[in-house]
Image 1 (tube, protein in one colour):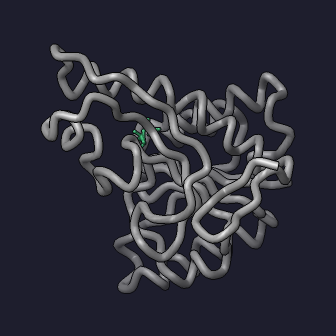
Image 2 (spheres, rainbow, N blue to C red):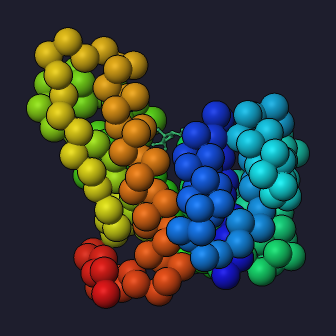
Length: 199
Ligand code: GRF
């Protein structure tokens, strides 16, 4: 199975997936890494691993859907069957979601449905929760909303800063995201309404 990772930043989750591929844990082919940021470090990581990279400049597209049509052109070119969003800082259009229905995963740094959006770590810390952690979920038309695949619990310490807490959440992301990709690739994820069963 060919799959793609979309990212905009450092790409540490991308790296965790690359490492799991190298260890032979995920039996699939990472055929494409797409970024909306020209100089993002994730592109360096992909190139180092010998993975084809594509930068798509959002400024060249007036509407979100047109950007996504260009994305789809590349996905079809590489016969991509699974998309993993890993720190991709753009909202996916309903057009792309429909086209790859139940074939898009995302990682979020909070226990959904709490603390959606881009400040999931900071807001959980400020709210005073005692437990937080990352969520891998399928992507649907609503932001940070689709059926949940895996979550991991991270205890919040009294002396945590956003940085220290984020560090421990990320450590869990690097475990559960490759695991979720592996389960998907092996056909072990069954979506029933909001629930994802591991079969
Ligand atoms: C992660 O914290 C992830 O939960 C969120 O974006 C961040 C991506 O970091 N969606 P990286 O680019 O994988 O290092």
